[in-house]
Every structure is written in C-alpha cells, then in structure tokens.
Image (tube, rainbow, N blue to C red):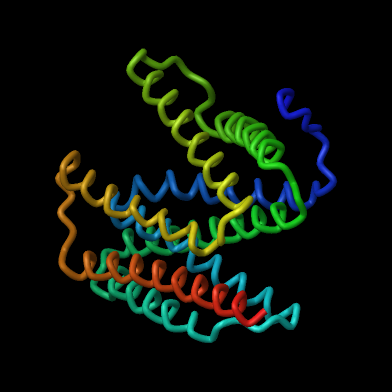
Length: 244
C-alpha cells in the first residue's frame, strides 16, 4: 500500500464488509466440512461457489434489466443432478449434514466473489481489498479462538503447518482478488476446479479415502458444469463484443 500510495480508507465500506463477512463464513465452513466429509467431496462442494456466483450474476442481470444467457441454466441443472448423486438418500445422515454445510460453503463463497466483482467494477484497488480482508481474518480468527478453546501452545511442526496455511491462503486470496481486476469473472473460476482433482488425489494418497463411483461421477459433474458455465459466459461476452 505504501509503495503504490494507496489509502487504507475505502469509499465502499459496505461492499468491503459484505465481501469479508461472506468470505469468512465460507472459509470457516470450508475448514469444518473437512472434518466431517472426505477431502475430495468437501472440496468439490466448496467449489460450487462459481455456480452460485453465476446464479447471483444472473439475478443481478434480471434486476438491472440486462440480458443474460439462458444457456447458463444447463450447467446449473448438471450441477444440481451432480449434487444429488453426492447427497443420495442412502448417505449417512451425518455425512448428509456435511453436504448441506458444503453447499452453504459454496453459496457464501459465490456471494463473496460477487462482492469482489462489485468492488472491482467501482475501481477499488486490489491491495486495499486484500488489506481489509487480512485484517478481518485476524479479527475473525481471534474472536473465534476466544469463543472456543482459547489460545494454547503448539509444537514447531504445528507452527510450520499453520504458517504454510496462512501464506498459501493469503497468496490464493490475493491472486483471486487481483484476477477480478481485468479478467472475465466466470472464466477465472474455471481454473479453480483444478483444486478438486488435487483434493481427490490427496485424499486417496494421504488419507486412503477412496470415493465410490457415484461420488466420483457427482464430483466430475460439478467440475464440468462449472467449466461449461464459464465457457458459455465467455462465448456470450465475445458475441456481444462483436455485435457492438
């Protein structure tokens, strides 16, 4: 911020608060569902965020009277069926609650990304947005810790893991925030789905979590629907550009 001479004071406090509130809930749910669901399933449900983002964009278009592609209903339908395969009736009730929390995680993530888009549209510097996000994360973490077991000593191994999580998470948030400054929002979200396959592979290799066939189909369907939504939005944007 000092290097770019960017002020810390934002002209859009409401949007900054909305982004941080929804993103903090998203991150908290994302951490919790890893305790109650296999890592691949948890991460896949977390990555429904771009699909909820598409729903919010469509809703915004309707409210503003802007035309949007009805073809987006196709990937949303695929996603719904894919989630149904993951949350099938024979699933353990405890896991079913985890699936619900996973979808809530995706919803809050999608709304949080929508707030980033609104900030970007209004010319809010990504450095300022990231600063308030980090500050909100520290405050949220401190309050959450005090409401739980409180602070306690950690081993050097635990400390190294916590630092790694903090660094990679901050880098990911910065990349996500910066990408919205000049890229197509839905196209950006396509690349996030690489995390699903890394998560499933990590679950198999590190934790011996072998997903069943229906879960694999459901996870694949969610990824396909997200990529298809991004492609349709990208094609629509190019078509409108040529028309203009």
